[in-house]
Image (tube, rainbow, N blue to C red; front, side):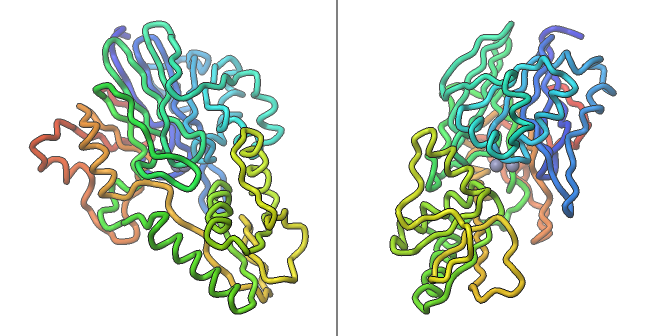
Length: 368
Ligand SMILES: [Zn+2]
Ligand SMILES: [Zn+2]
């Protein structure tokens, strides 16, 4: 296969969320970007690694030399032990914080793969044969990184999940100061023209706070269910800031991550925050990743909110980066509004945009 060519294939997580895993062949170098799991109706699914061997790119999993892991959400990270069973030699790169959070989530599965992992820092550069690679702050959750690959003069940026707005725990994404030729975009809302993010100061979080405040003021306890462990940590900091008197009782899954954050000197817990050992008698907030108990006198509050750019912000981001090619992944169709408009259709009418788009399917190879 010719040396300067660039091939891309989504191994999972193409036009869906879950099992994010993207293969890049840069000349003789074979890389994976992320290695996650998904689940539909409680059934776990991993990337289709075997599809790689059906391509002319790879004869053996050991030819994949490097894996870059963007962040600790399980849809980007949980299949890493599965891949390392196929290729125990692959070198894996992630930030220290991703490593901390992931080890708390994968537990003994993680201990077995520790020796493959190298920690990297933002703006750190690593030289590999014919490539230079650097890592950049992605926003979204603590530790999340974008990966920039310079291969034969071309810049390829993989965003992972990112946010161009700050969250309670991390600053906004910081783009590398170079011209990007190929953008591999985790565009969760790239096909959701009617989706608007309701940010920190805005609706979703305000609504959660309002409902908690209302219940507590009326002497009732609250059961707040969070959909992702890191969102639980965000909510602790939010409640501590805006309802400083509220007692918070935190389930063990969220507590584990809180401890990891505190290990790397991000303080979360305050005096009025406690691990959830029993259901509190005094009105307080139970913060849990589990569904609420069936017979409960607690007020049930849905603790979900978005850590992703909305449609308009996604369009702005791609307009700003203005890559030659944008490969859009992690990009489910619009089930809610059944809208057909995509990021591509907006930018096609923009005279300053030079971008052509690819919305790949899983297992579909492209030469870029
Ligand atoms: Zn994520
Ligand atoms: Zn994701």
